[in-house]
Structures are given as C-alpha cells and as structure tokens.
Length: 528
Image 1 (cartoon, rainbow, N blue to C red):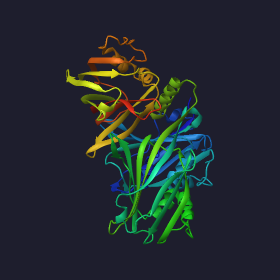
Image 2 (image 1 turned 135 degrees about the horizontal axis):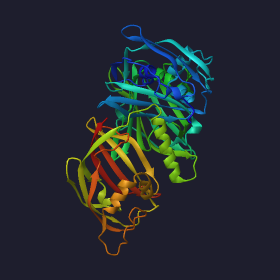
Image 3 (image 1 turned 90 degrees about the vertical axis):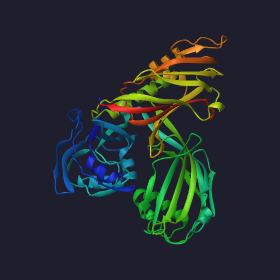
Image 4 (image 1 turned 180 degrees about the vertical axis):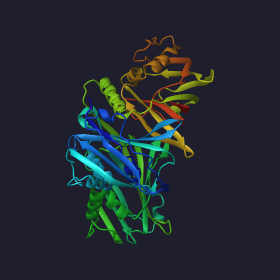
C-alpha cells in the first residue's frame, strides 16, 4: 500500500503559489477545504478540519495533521488543478510528481512554505527536512482579496499529494542545452544597445555565458521584466504561456531565486550583490557557468526564451536578449524491461492522479479534419489521396495511401503532440514525447486502434510482403488504407474539452528528420 500524506492546500495555493506571476486581478473566494475521499485509509489522516468565515474577505482554517516521516529527499509531491465544467471536474495540466518536495517548495514557493510551517510550530521552517511529528493549524487566516495571476475565472479544485519517492518508478530530469545566445532584432533601438551576448560550450553538462551591457538608470521599482517562451513547431515559433510583466525585477528575483541573483550579482561585480536596486553602470560578465541539468516540470523540445526589461512609465525597452534551448527529458527507471518501464510509469501516473478519487470522464469526440503536415512532400513516408468521409453523427472513415520506403521497425521512433485551440491559435499541451520503436509502442499502449489501422491496409505493390495482422514491424511497400473507421464516440481517459489537434509523427532513429506526420483536428465534448 502506498505510504503517503495527502491533503488539500486549496486556500494556500490559490492565494500564494501564483504570486510569481502578474497579469489580471481576480477576487478569489475559498468555498471549502476538505481532506481527500481516501483520508481514512491514509496512515495518518487529517483530523478536526474546520473552515470558518471571519469577514467578507477572510476565512480561518484549522486542522490537525501528521507527517509520518521526515519531509526530506525521500518524499515527493504533486499538485493537481481541476476546473468545474460540464457537470464535473476537468483536469488542467499543472505540476506533476516532483521528488524532494521540501527542497522544491523552498525553491519556488519559499514564502508560502516557510509561513505555513512557522504557523504549525516547526523549529526551522526555512530548512529541509521538515521533522516528522504531529502538527496543528489553528485559525490560519485565509485572505481572499484581490490577487494578480494569469488564470481563468470559474470554480477550481486544487489537490496536493505527498508520497514517498521509492513508491514511484520514474523520476523526471531534463538536460537543457543552451544552443546559442542572440541579441533581439531591435537591439540598436534600445536605451543603450547590448554590446555582446555569447554562449560557449564548457563540457557536456555546462555552458559559459558572456555579456556586456549598460544600465543607464538603476534597476529599481520603475522597471518591469518578462520572460517570453516560444516552442518550435510546424516550421515556426509558437507562443506559450509565459511570465507576465513583473514590477521591480530586482526584488522579484530576490524573492523567487535569491541565491541565483546573488551569484549573478557577484559575476557583475556589484559591491552589494544581495541588495536592491542594481545601480546604473557598465557591466561585463565573462564565462558565467550555466548548469544544463534541471529537475523541474517542463516539456521536451526546442524553445526560444527572451528576457525583456522596460520602463513602466514609458513602456520603452532597455534590455532584450534571446537564447535557444534544446530540452531533453531523461527518465531514470527502476525496471529492466523497456515496455514494462513505460507501463509501470503509466500505472504510477494513474495512481497519483486518482489518489483523491477524481471522477471518471467520458468524452464524445468528433473528427473534424485529418491533414497531412505542411512538410508532407519532404517526408520519407508521404501521404497521398487523403480523404475523410462522415458516416454518421459519431463515426467517420479515413482513406489514404502511404509508401514505406523502409520497414516501420525498431529503427523508427515516434510520438504524439497535442495542441489546443485558444487565443486565436494553437497552444501546445505536454503529451507524449518521442518514443523508440513506435510500432511496438502503439501496439502495446494503443493496441485496438493500431491493429485497426493495420487491418485497414491493403498491399498495392505485389512485391510487398503481406502485413502480419496485429504485429510489428510493418514491411516496406506501398499501402492503401480504405475506409478506416474512426470511432471516438466515447472514450474514458483524462483529456481536454474543446478543439484539439492531435499530431502523429515519426522519425528515423538517431536522426532529426521526420519520416511521417499527420494531424487530426478533433472537437471534444465531455460527458460526466
């Protein structure tokens, strides 16, 4: 049985965890705080939980809880966010399982973490580990006044789960290769143009950054900063949710990453690197080391990060630098079988996601269009004569021709990308990164659909080998897919409502050139 401590920080996370961002103002009312449905089965359940109304904008929270083990590197955690819609809770991608939750919380949510553990009587709330023991929250004031976060209006449920890391089979780490550093196209129009921005390779895990620039005025409360994140896809850069404008970037940096700010200040030659504001002057940073290994929730792929500083009063930029990042996920697995590793990880995901008894979701999916990708003619396996026919209200059939110039075997990797329509464009959603031996992978995890595809194939080239139904690899040859039934009338998996683009892609192993690519445009409606 999983050893875990699970409880809701609804009021705390709504009120504090997003203070790293600032866009629109919202009034947040904490409706209720409650333990998870399986609270009684937890070794040390939450006890005596009460949420009382104090006045129009404040409530008080009280409860007793126990940390059965020290909150150290052996305890991880996750935060699940759900939005109420269609008569039930709809999961929104947020923060997956993170090892060493205490360290992670101090790194990203220090104020919240320290204040909470100070209230419950932890002797050193700003240190890890947090000792095991019985703790009491007594009349904790929940402030529901205006907050400034990039969020949505509506009703939300936040669920926090703590779990021993050794019950997880997968840990996620990322190697972030800083490919290059660039000056923004409008560098010459800046208050004082940046003179140099360069990234050099030190070794496999580190890069060195050099930059020469000038602050004509102090970096103080009259300035604001943002970090724009874009992901490479469909032959161009796609905007992603980014860090909105933050007033007083020096103090903001001290709050969210003081150690990094001090280290950078020393590299800049500041007399007092631990103080704000940063004085006006000429600054030169030479060969500043950058670590490429991270353990944070992110996505694999190629990204462009742009740091911009500007004056609040005039909205005039005075600093702008871009860097290209290649992010690769490294998954450390405990099993020896590649297929079993993936399956175990998937099972662990469902255990974590369903620890608190989430509702099972059923979706009606209408296939709007099926398209070849824009680079279809340059692919090794191009699609021909693609046609989608509507059979009835819930069924469509797909026909096309494809030529495999080499077998679809262990040398061909592939994956699925998901984009959701919003803000007038497609917004990427983390889904399934590149997997080795895509034929075996789909046969293992999407067997019914994959076998259906293979059974729809007819050999057009008489020299091609017949396809063993329901097996891999698929021999090379020219194939005709006739009237493949696309029945997504009811599926029961965690997904997103709305207009979604699902893209299947494949590439030759150890190559960055795509061999196959096709997209499905879906209209998804949830039924609870």
